Length: 471
Image (cartoon, rainbow, N blue to C red):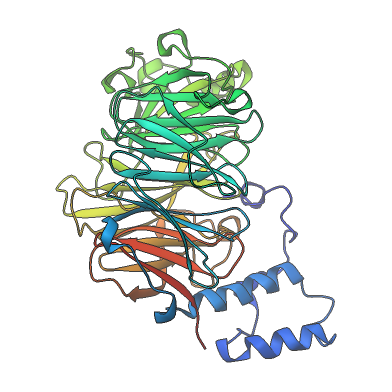
């Protein structure tokens, strides 16, 4: 893969500049504070060192020193399993979505309990999303979404009715101020928070597909990704949430099953709820045309707003049929997507990284595909039937994955370089940076603080652990 493909706009280093992995020295945990002191008194590492990259080296050292702190262990046993963790954007509040209808709020710095939202819903609370530093939304198996204001937690701002089954996911488009929710009824619904009243918000169904599991927006809200329990990943390009979609109207609907480099065919006809587009693309055997010419023609035609792409992500050693995609996350810089899916035998799970490829194909003999598998790791499926939520660190260099009764910190390489600096020619294993066993039951959810060097995890029995560096 060329250097041009790996470099992203705004990346501080230039082609040919040595990255952190090639530097002669590594920062040991014991030297972190002396390094910070030297920088503060002007005796840093010199003007030739990129301070941004050195900061990342220090953060890698700090993350590698993470340990659970007994003094900041939070208990939610009274309220059932911890299904989701969410920090406010300024890192001042940690919220916990609980199995038994409650939402808990903690101060993550002092570990003090701030508030319990008793009976926040009438069933399990599944997901929490902050719209800004004070307003947040919760969703539940009671089919509703609720809006809350940190300045007055005694009552909801409003309750949103529109879904007909369990609501599992909340996203927020900062450009249009539209709240976006998805549930097991297969609906993706948009809510206009600009016109919110005590009775709710105007809403409409934006998209529908069967077997919907998770829905995410890229950081710039230009794409929507939807995962399904049947193993498909749907991508809506050039996203426009003000339009409602009818899948059958989109001639650009296409699906790609990556069975091998020479057998790339559409699989959208196998996805329930979507109209069959029974055509083959990208192979000269099927069309009689050179695949590079077909790809160039596709690029020239372009795609309309909300053009839909249906993919079957390649899973190592699991290529025969689709796997249930249980967790879906986006890289904080929008470079890649992170999924967790079950094996065909349901005894293992796979954590996979797929890089977005919006440009022409890497090889002229291959058709264009929007996702390319770069990294993966196998995990034991401890606690079958429960979804384990992964997360990226704020800088996108680390992944925290639930791992049995603990967590695993994973990097793209052993030096925790950025994805664009260590893209492999072939898919390779994620590197295990640190594994911590701290819980007494299966870990279900993890979350990095957006502002502090802190990590939180929650488990099936209701324990929530906070991790911070210890030297």
